[in-house]
Length: 251
Ligand SMILES: Cc1cc2nc3c(=O)[nH]c(=O)nc-3n(C[C@H](O)[C@H](O)[C@H](O)COP(=O)(O)OP(=O)(O)OC[C@H]3O[C@@H](n4cnc5c(N)ncnc54)[C@H](O)[C@@H]3O)c2cc1C
Image 1 (cartoon, rainbow, N blue to C red):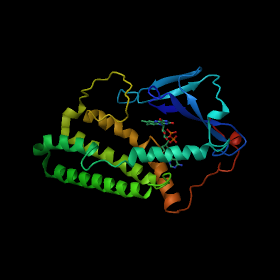
Image 2: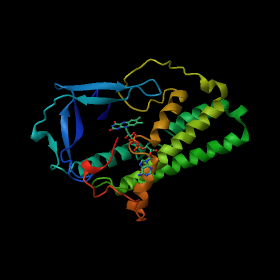
Image 3: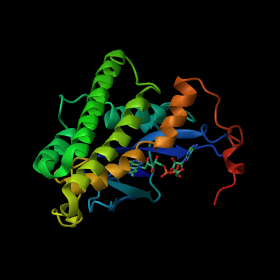
Image 4: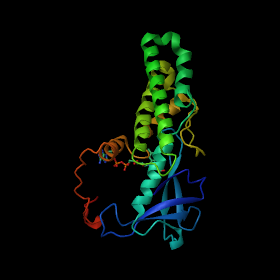
């Protein structure tokens, strides 16, 4: 199991395969686990930025009382989807004030280099600003419509768009910085921050945003979700959909 910022959270949620005779999305059960309990070992995973925002967690003979179960036995996938949809909205669907967040960092760096960067960079910066604003306004609209209830598959829109835009914004920033972009001013000491996505230096932010298209579900998976569950396009072939998990070949 992986968990984000487990060193600052007392409790984690863990999904366990409780029935191997059911197909892969069935037979899973979700539990709340005391991260400081006996047999729970939290090992930091060091990222390319030098920071360990999240961890891999090992369980050795850990016992969890049934009262710590979240949802019904075998229904963990449904519970997990609820947490995943909320995670996606928290990654890509948050509404920030205009011009804040990553675009503020991009603007700050661009303005320092605007004279040397030339007209093409000005055009690119304007385009990025517009897209950041379009994302922000789309997120405002989406947040209004989900005021009640759990976010659905449409939460993947913001996650998909944010991941790709963040990567373009930080690539642009590195380009306008030139050789300075190769310096890593924060140094490389392993640290375990209390919050994710530290934007304190553009170089660190550039490396960190590469994970945006992986974490919380990859860009390809977001496209599958939107294609199938929002646009109603034909589904991907799924040969193991109805096959008992124990019979699915794996390495
Ligand atoms: C910074 C960071 C933080 C994370 N934090 C956590 C955390 O706190 N908790 C946690 O549990 N996990 C966490 N993860 C793990 C993350 O959720 C997974 O890495 C992610 O969901 C992708 O799964 P995978 O690595 O198994 O890749 P795979 O599923 O093996 O995918 C490999 C590649 O194949 C593509 N692919 C896979 N299936 C399909 C398909 N059906 N159609 C098209 N393309 C496909 C993917 O897009 C990807 O490019 C984190 C990852 C990162 C990078």
